Image (tube, rainbow, N blue to C red):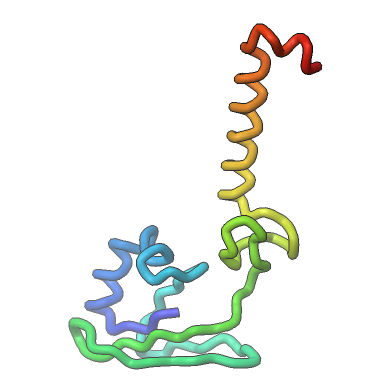
Length: 111
């Protein structure tokens, strides 16, 4: 979670869809520096940094979701389940493989 002054929050919101990849984390939440409430957790880590309009704080909190066994991001709905992105990719690969086999003239011998 990032707590930011209003000026900086507007800048970061422009890149909201890319922040997870930029920071190499599973999720990013943007909050106003004034009046933000940190969710209760068993542990947390924070560090301040300079941003336009003042100081920002980056909070590292335990993940809310389960770890995806394929991509290792904490965005899976349950332990040992694939996240939505990995399910889509694995499904596409299976579909492509099935199409390749069905178009192969020798596939009649594999079924």
